[in-house]
Length: 200
Image (cartoon, rainbow, N blue to C red; front, side, top):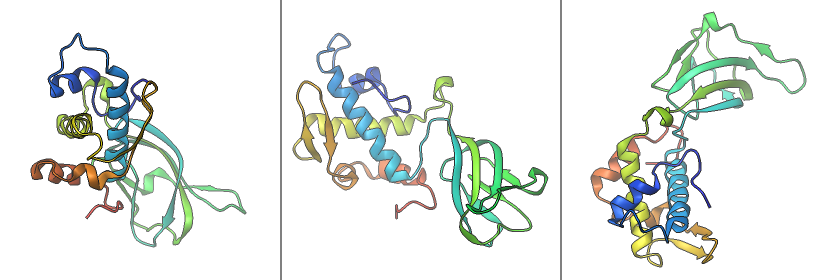
């Protein structure tokens, strides 16, 4: 097991949070699995991936309004937007007629987006540049807090299964893990959630 490229924490950070010695590497594979699982839960909770990633042919419903909210933000760049129809050839939208609101994560078109089901196809880059140190410290703290809860009390906070040796961990769900976290951490996590996610 190794950390996924979009992990929200690191072994060094998790060890420091758990007050484990730097030389204590006996549980690194377990920690990596927990960090990966916590990262996945945070991303699912927020409805987005945080690390800068290219998204190709992401389909959206044209809602007849002037706005389309992408699934990931901040938007770094938009490569193309097509009016998509599985029967006829896709038609490229002219970039002169829409405006990308990078931090807000939406695209505005004065003439509106044609109403339809999965009829808007967008290729774009979005997310934060982790390699340049743009991983938010508060997300790292929340990730470490979730790792700490499961590391110190695995049966109470949502581990459904664990294969000792390979450390394959499956969590029961985010609800068990966020319960008991400090309110300020939960509120900060909600601030990162997409408008289209199920977080309330």
